[in-house]
Amino acid sequence: MAQNVGAVYPGTFNPLTRGHEDLVRRAMKLFDRVVVAIAASPGKSPLFSLEERVELAEAVLSEIPGVSVTGYDGLTVDFARAHGLGVIIRGLRAISDFEYEFQLATMNRHLTDQVETVFLTPTEHFTFISSSLVREVAELGGDVSAFVHPQVAVALGKKFGAA
Image (tube, rainbow, N blue to C red; front, side):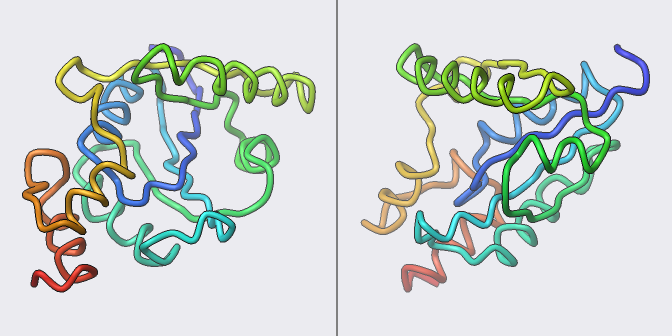
């Protein structure tokens, strides 16, 4: 493990999935601390408010030492620098994710040379899970319990009138 290296795992996390959890656990094997930075993303019209997403992530990730959760807006590289985090973690589920993530990493490198991007892949049985698919399944009344933490499943049920 690298010493005294902190990483930020940014995203909308709308909602946090088992795939996200898996990447946080993998990242903690590499870094001393990981900040899960939840983007406000008002342009995406998230199902859950920023406060709800932060609360859910805190509840789900609270048992993992070295992990903290916070909301933010603005540029991720600015957030990373302001919090002394030298690495941005990005998840790659499939080859289709790579082009966008590569562009993002390249832009971030142009914005600052103080922050590096590291790509992690989830465990194979999480590669097909995305927040948007989970929301769609939940909205249509499907069982999302295999894809999200129980607290997230309850929150989805409340949003879609199933609880």
